[in-house]
Length: 220
Image (tube, rainbow, N blue to C red; front, side):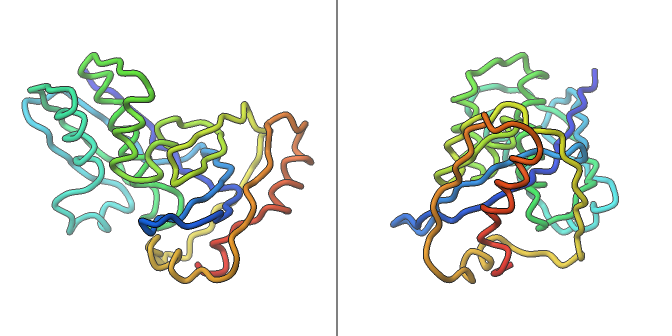
């Protein structure tokens, strides 16, 4: 039995940095959607946990002995107290360090796929807490649907279906680590996005995106 899971690209349609916590993490507010493209995970039963990577961007992971996929698998196995394994094949279609949550989406797909393989049905809140321990973007990728993400990524407010929107994502093949981009940001904090999901149609969405913008575009 093989289970297939798409790990879609996460798109921050807006991104406001609204504050900074004493522990150094920034608080944010972002209208998040998911694209129709992504990495592909194939999960099959096995005695031990193992990972195989292929695909156009597999080479960027060749030097890693550990990554978010294996960390997610081990964390779920430990939390559930299971003595089971799985072989995970990751077809890496998304570029790394591109701001589209590739690794986080891979981790979320791993959690969801292993829950199916291991016949687990934990409450979403419990799985989301585990996801947050892996990274700030993993909970929203676990939800996998349009929402307003706030706090450090742990607060998710569903928007309902957004209007259909076509995007061209252009990557110059220059990786950008998250930490230095946040560190390069200057200026005052922004007000949180006001989007209730009741706005009608594509014109209203585009007006919202134009007004809100992305606070990390300039430092990136």
